[in-house]
Length: 131
Length: 133
Image (cartoon, rainbow over all chains, first blue to last red; front, side, top):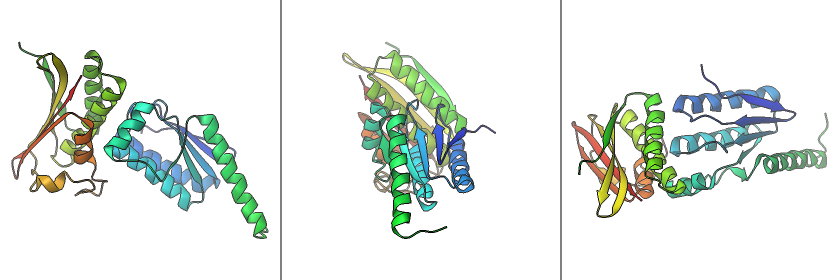
């Protein structure tokens, strides 16, 4: 079965969507990602969509689902590289993806994930978190 | 003047992807701006999925249309599915019968210049959209 590869980089998972996604592929990615987050206890997920030429309501919903699910699993999701034409279309379509953190490129996206991860560790320290 | 047209089947998930590619190549040929291309292709994707999921499959006709000096791309989605009992309701944002977001019809209407829907219960649905250059 066709799959979108998920790369593990330290505490984070990286996904680059480079194909014109059909619906089943989007659903498979959602399932695979949640499994991987739980398996590696990942702190963050970065999804780069710079080569996606469209995001319709189905793909948009899948991205929102991934962000919501990873949040429940204590991981932060960042969506990077959305093309301006895609952003304009998505908002006009009626999807603002307000629940998802976004960044212009992968570099900034990684920065956000690192900050988030550091903050949550600090919070645990402040609360007297002990192993 | 006879304008060119093509008909593509929408029978499976792969056809939704195919329909997007067809809409893209026609929009490119007419030299629509990148934003207009993206809007047309996104609307095509929404409507093709409706044709597949709600209409149990059908077809998309693509044609280049003219109105005076203006040229545009017209896409017509046709199915012989159960039809839509209440079109006004179906065109509302957030109305869904499939557990989706309910943005397919209402959202794609906002992405194009012309939007025309005809539906008959038990007979099927025809949705035609046009994006002018």
